[in-house]
Length: 178
Image (tube, rainbow, N blue to C red; front, side, top):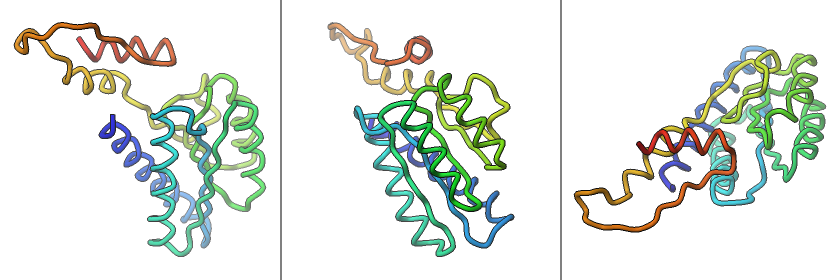
């Protein structure tokens, strides 16, 4: 799990840099808003931790970069945070949605204001409100942990449980195990 979180954190750093480069073309000072779910369990806890680590490293390396990280415990809170973030001049947003369908309209409103929007992991129900999308690979997220489950060669038996909060993610992770 730690390696998965680390890989996701590295993806967030890469994404942050890519979004920053796009904004840097248009402005001297780059502000990157990162909207992510609050740390309600291990996975999102890792995302919050890695986002803050990336913020420290990137702001130290780039004096013209400011990163604002907002965490939300609900979709309405995240939608309000997006509206607050767009009050910052020439901001670029990276959004890991708390819940995709409910954020479609708030993200579309932000996009209409000319903000460059990159969605991470959970895509929106329509692509018109985003400029870029970086998908999580739920099949691999199932395959990697499954490698640690004892098989016939190990001679062990027991019960194994599939853990996923979203039905599509559970299906994709299960496919990765087989």
